[in-house]
Length: 514
Image (tube, rainbow, N blue to C red; front, top):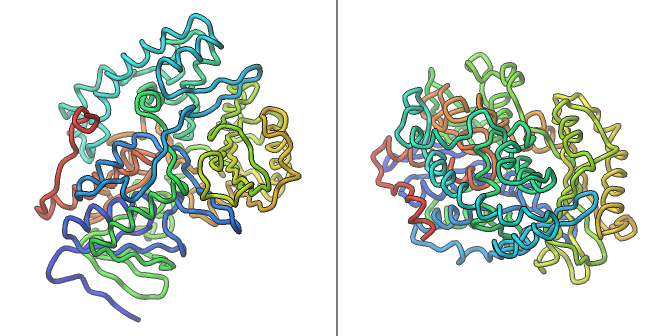
C-alpha cells in the first residue's frame, strides 16, 4: 500500500473531484503557490461539466448556458491571464427561443430588440422592460457582493454587506410574484421566471431575490463556448497544471481520512493514502456525505437527515446525433401547455408524461466542432421528479422518450427526429444517481429555499470537520456555473487566509463590469 506525504516546503491541498468548482479552486490555489493534487474518479475531467462523446458527436453532459461571463474572466485575470486565450466565446442573439402554445418569442440580447419582441407578442408590455432592467440592476448590485462572501457563523448574517442588501431580497415574494410587478401577461412572466429551473425550482416557489438571474441574462448576455461548455473545465485544468497542480483521473477516493474532528487526507480505492494540510470536496455534496465519511462521524449532514431536506428536481436527458442539420435557435424552451400543472406535478414527485416542458440545444447551428458536416448534435432535457419519487425509470424510460420526441415533433420546427437519429444516449434520474454520483438524482443539488441558503446551507468551510472545505452547487452560493466558480474562490480564499498566503479579494462589481 503506497503512501504520499505532504510537502515540507509549502502548504498542500487535496481536491476531491475534477468538476468545474474543484478545478477552479485548484487553479486559484496552485497559482498562489500551494501544492495541489486533484483526484477524479472518472477517466475524464469536468464532472457534470464534462464532455460526452458518442462517436463523432460531442455534447456537454450538463450545463449549456454560460451567464455572468465576467466572473470567469476575473478568475483568469487573477493569474495574469485572459480567458479568451483559452476559450472561444460566442455571445448569443437571440439568447433563446420560447415556445408557448400559440406563439414563439425570440429573447433578444439587446434591450431595444427585446422591447420590440415583447410588444409584438404582448402589446403594451414592451416599455416595462426598461423598468425591469433599472430596478433589477439595483437589486443585482446589492445582492451580488453577498454571493462573494462566506456565511460560516450566525454573526456573518449581520455583515454590513448583507444588511445593505436586506431591503432588496424580496422577502416573502416568489420569483413569479416579483415579475408580476413588471409584466401583466402570464406567459411573459414565464419568459422571465422559467430560469428558476436553473436552480431546479418552480417560479412559484423560488425566492424573489433570484430575479437577478433573468436580469443578468438580459444585462450581460448568454454565451456559448466553441467546442462546448466542457472546454471551460479543460481550460481551468490547463492553467492549474501549468502552475504545478497534479490532476489524477481514474482515481476514485474511497474515504476522507480523519484524526478526531480534523481532516488529514484521503484514501483512494486502491488503498493508497494521500495526506495534505486541507481537503476541498467538489464531489456532489449528498453523495460525499453518504460515501466519503463514516456516518457515525457526521452530525447534521448524515445521509438520513439530508433525505429530509429539500432537493431540486431531476432531468430526463437525451443526447442525439442526427444526420441532418436544423435552422432552429441555439437554445429552445418548450413550455408545457399548462406549465404550472407540469411544475407542480414534478414537485409532488408524479410521473406525468401527457404535457411536458422540454429544452433543446442545437449547438451545431453555431459550432462546427460538435458534429460532422451536415450533421447535428442535439441535447434534450425534460425536468422530472428526483428519485425521492420512487419512479421506476427502467419501466418508464421508453414511454418518456416517446413523449419527449412527440412534444418536439408537435411543438417545434424540428419535426420528427426519429428517422435521422444515428447515435443516442438517454440519462434518467436513476442514471444520474447510480452512474454520475448525484445524490437522489437531484441534478441541481439542494433546493435554494430560504431555509437552505447562506448560513443555513452547508458552509464553504465545512462545519463538521476542520481543514475541510466545500465547493460546488451544494454549498454557498449555490448551483449553476457562475456560483460554483464563486464557491471555489470563497474556499480558496479561506484556505489562503488561514495560512496568510497573499491573494486578491473579489473586485467590486462596478470595477469588474467597467
